[in-house]
Length: 165
Image (cartoon, rainbow, N blue to C red; front, side, top):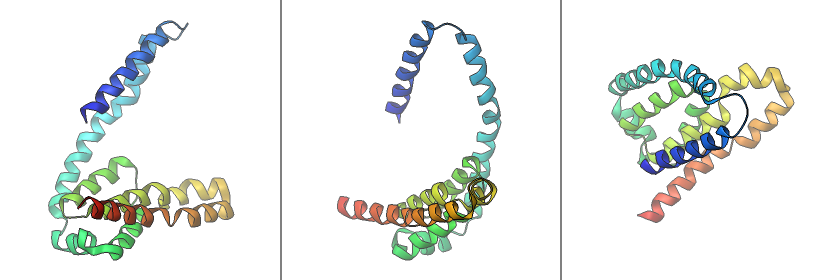
């Protein structure tokens, strides 16, 4: 994790030095824009993490472990695909739910599947944005093309885990 922070710090420093040589806008204006974008997250992230912690206590561990645990295999991967596709909301909702499911016993392959399905299939985004903008034909083709991605990601994760064992 520290390497990610160091990499981002070096990248930020390099961009700041490059930007220093450019005409307007200056660093203060750019920093003010960054602060404006970050301010809402300073409230949302702690609330989402606390809500995720509470949710982790409410999730029935036995049900999660049998349905989505490491031992659930392909059936758990298919269930995770469906759950990821129908999970509403953005990252502020999804990742606390994912943390709760992980602490309740969701397997690695099943979690990779769930997050992948949420990323590429999210039906709430399809209904709200994709269908109105792109229409039924293109949306249907994209969904069919992407439908297999989440289960493949889960199966590959299972294979990688088996190879490491």
